[in-house]
Image 1: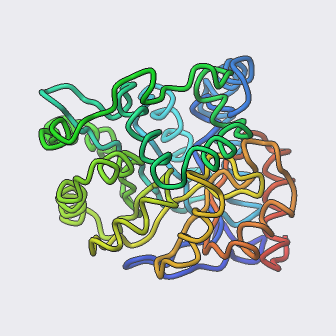
Image 2: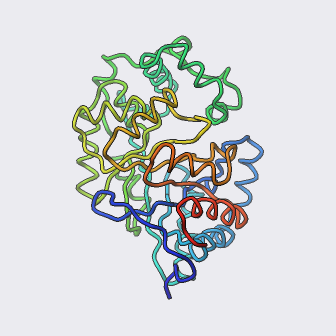
Length: 337
C-alpha cells in the first residue's frame, strides 16, 4: 500500500540528482529545540523521549499529508537515535520508505580543537555580518530577532561580539583544518541509513567568513564521493551564498532561514531575500514560522510566493500541529488534503 494513497502527492523539484518534495519534515522539536524558551525545551525532552509517540506524529504526517522526507541529525546522539528509530517504526507500520536529509557537522579544527561552536567562531561571524551591512542595519536586524535571543540564552545581553571576544585572525584561519577522523565518526552515526541528501552544517558560514573556500571545496568533494546529492545549510545566506558562488563552489542547493519577521536571516532580511532570488540553485527554507511566532498559510505564502523558495522544511511536534501546519502548507501549494 502506498503511504500517499489517501492524499494528493506533494510535488517535487529537481535537486542535484534527485526529485525533492516541496514540503519536508524538520527535526525540531524532536531534539528538544523549541525556539521559544527553556521550559518548552524541557517539555519537548519529556514528550519525545519514547519512540512510539514520535512515530505517531511522523506517521500522521506521512499517511495523511503525503510527507516522504525527514531531516535527521547526529549532534544530540540519544534523541537523534530515538528519532531515527521512530522513522524506522513509521516505515515498518506503513511498509514504505522515508527518505533522509542528513545534517552533518563540519569538524573545523585549530591546533587540534574543534572550533565550530566556540565563542570565537560566533565573534567572527558577528564581525562578518557587521562588515557586510554596517552597524546600524545589522543591529536593527538582530534586536528584533527572538530566535537569536533564544539561542543565546534568552537575552541579547549574552551576544558574543568582536568587542567581547577576539574573533579568529587571518593567521588563525590559515591553520584551520577539517578533522576527517572525527567526521567519519559523525557519519558512523548514520550507519545502516540510506542518505537521500547530505547537508554540510552551517559551519560553511565560518569558513566563508575567514576566506577558507579551499576547505569548503575540499569538504564538498569528500561528501560527493559518498552521496549523490549535497546541499549546504547557510545561516548567513545574504553574504555566504554570493561568495561561494563567486568562487565557483557547486552545491546542489541551499537550506536557508526564511520567514516574514526576518528572524535568523543574516546579515539582514533584505540581503537574504536578494541572495535567494539571485541564485540559480534550489533553496529549501527553514524556520518559515519564525519558531512558532508566525503561523498559518501566511508563513508559507511568504516563503513560496513572496521570496520564491522551491521547498520548505518545518518541524511538527504533535498530531494537531501536523494537521494545522501541513494543511496550511498544502493549501498554499494548491493541494487537496
